[in-house]
Amino acid sequence: MASLEGVKLKIRKKYIEKTAKIRKKSLKVRDFTIISNNCWGGFIYQSYEISYNSPTIGLYFMADDYLKFVADLPKYLITDLEFVDPESSIYYDQLKNDKVFGSYPIGKLNDIEIIFLHYKSKEEAFEKWTRRCKRINWDKMLVKFNDQNGCTEEHLNIFEKLPIKNKICFTSKEYKNLNSTIFIESASKQKSVNASQEPFGNSKYINLNKLLDSL
Image 1 (cartoon, one colour):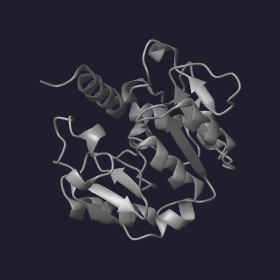
Image 2 (cartoon, rainbow, N blue to C red):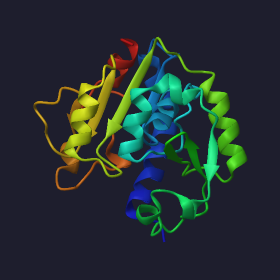
Image 3 (cartoon, helix red, strand yellow):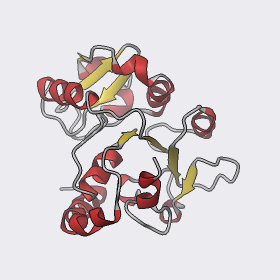
Image 4 (cartoon, one colour):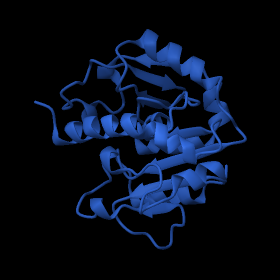
């Protein structure tokens, strides 16, 4: 049986697909790159009917690894992508209870791991990661984080201090001292923001159309 979050994501995807043609008319810039800690970036490209100009599609990072990744993107993105046995993952204890654990590949770039949740094989993950790395637009980049996957307030503070020009972070709590965070009120009773709650287009939380055009 699908989880409630899984059902919400399917509904969200159908809505995005049906409204994409309308939404893309409000966007002037289409060659931007989104570096995301989860599947949000993929949803955004789908919502405007844009090709994936980023390797961070259909996958997620644990908070520690994501911060290392975005703190030194050029280094990690020229590193050869390798793969580890799922049971050898440093996050095995956190992942082992996932019903689909072991069915998706886990990649490795030096000291960080990438959970390729929506990929069926190492070969598929490697091919798409490599191809999409070549599409990155370093001049029009948005880095997105959220409070999932082991994220603590310390992680949020580290993200805030990173010298990244364009960055946003969705959180289930309000942090008035962290300028990069966007409080998602609908997630206020949760430990973290669910992927189905992350905004797109022009919402009450953020005008993403305007932000992307400003990159």
